[in-house]
Length: 122
Image 1 (cartoon, one colour):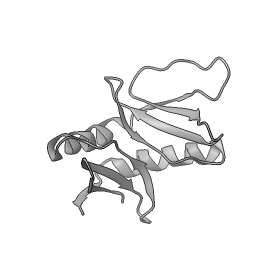
Image 2 (tube, rainbow, N blue to C red):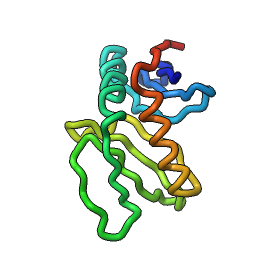
Image 3 (spheres, rainbow, N blue to C red):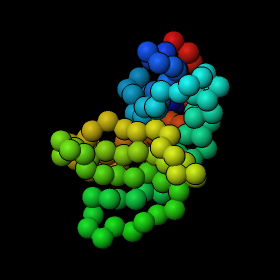
């Protein structure tokens, strides 16, 4: 079972979603307040399990409706994802993966671990 870990960054709270093995599988932006951070967690819990995948690494990819996981290649050539809520805001993002397959597995882990995850504050 996953858990959301809220921690204080220099300018406000943020969260990491951790898988059952303790590995960070998604990270948030820094929020202005604890309330908005917890709203972000609620949004990930709601959207991650139902979000479709938009594979932007494919030529002529199909634009999907939000909520969605956008899979893309970053400037270093790594494959990453970002989770967008129904309103189009980015609510979580993943690390850089060396393969697209590993990135897709990361998304599957977020879907599995986000719903019903515990929330803890560091």
